[in-house]
Length: 497
Ligand SMILES: Cc1cc2nc3c(=O)[nH]c(=O)nc-3n(C[C@H](O)[C@H](O)[C@H](O)COP(=O)(O)OP(=O)(O)OC[C@H]3O[C@@H](n4cnc5c(N)ncnc54)[C@H](O)[C@@H]3O)c2cc1C
Image 1 (tube, rainbow, N blue to C red):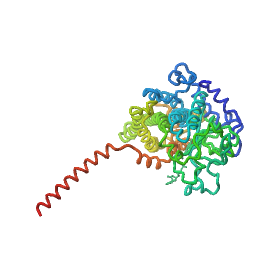
Image 2: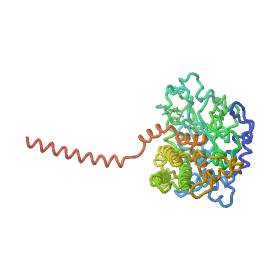
Image 3: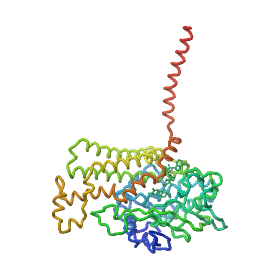
Image 4: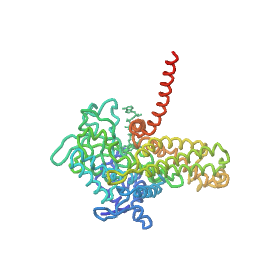
């Protein structure tokens, strides 16, 4: 197999997966009204790889089979490959205007990070290194769509996993056999799980404690595995009836989130990446290269999203000519600055990319950590600035039916902007509201804040690990100058006495 088409991707979702929404089991996710259009949006990304004008940018030749593969799986062999991947990520992200955080690129980059880190997994035994590499090759050659679930459910955060009120509220190993392990319990949460082919279970890098060993496991299973249940949150866009005028983003890009429950799911040994290993579970986030590859993709998508924000802000002010006021101009300038700052961190991560053990390249994690700490704050500020710029205009948003209805002309007349008709002005306002105010937009803002992990833990971890030795040395020199002066004064004072 090589790169799949959108149709092949959709056909692959018609299996025995157990997905529950609003109290019912979804028979076929591809036709379920709330899922159909997001799945089609993802399918378009698969079709892009078959577009002759884009194929060279979006694919590469597999080193093992010669198949055409999605470039997001590429383990960069040259520094330029990282730039090439960025350009591809951007093409994919622009297809959904940066509105889908968990389109296939994210986890394809995760898979590349897995392969890049295979030796680290091998610390628990050569077999795990092989499992990781073989799994990476399997998903790459079959062009599969993955999701992951890392965190434990918020049952009782004051206690470790083994002290929760039941043994398998948190996902863990219930049993092991000669063929594999039996998994029971839940992980919270997994975005787009019902739309994917494969689920990866990993720890989220928080500290497991002694006694938690059975919860310290990493593995991959097909989403259709017997015993695997996906318990979805309420859908925010209930059906596929929204039109692109009224809801240009939420009508097609809602990403569903689901709790993952394993009721004795069997995982063969060749799909286990580590097992009952406290040390690997607690260090997998910092010690592997997975995060740098994922966050590289994630930063590109953030730039595309921030670019849309810039354009929305400009179009709103242009539509009613508030752009003549410097106070409004300042707000737009701030949005652009945040977009450019995000882009700069991305470029810096590429510019200072690191060659790993004479083997492959990885983007510089320090700049990507900075991105992941700062962008959630930028995103909140950007939404607030658009709200402030749009003011009541964001509420006066009649629908397509109003313009086509019996009072259509009146709507068009009174909703008109400075140099545009009512329909055009309302279209901009509706886009802005779909971007910051609609319930799907609220979910995306929540996603931006948490998807990389709890922001407090991210910043606290970065505070400990970031390399700031140059500045510590410089400051040490400054302090040393003061100490010398102090010593001199002390000596002079003792001479006087
Ligand atoms: C929209 C969305 C999509 C997501 N998609 C995915 C996905 O696809 N895959 C995936 O694996 N994860 C996903 N996540 C989960 C995400 O990684 C977590 O939300 C994030 O790691 C924070 O963990 P938590 O939600 O369990 O919060 P918690 O850890 O429960 O934290 C809740 C609050 O309590 C505080 N707190 C908790 N523990 C401590 C402590 N020990 N010390 C001090 N304060 C503490 C936190 O600071 C926070 O304020 C998603 C989250 C969201 C919101």
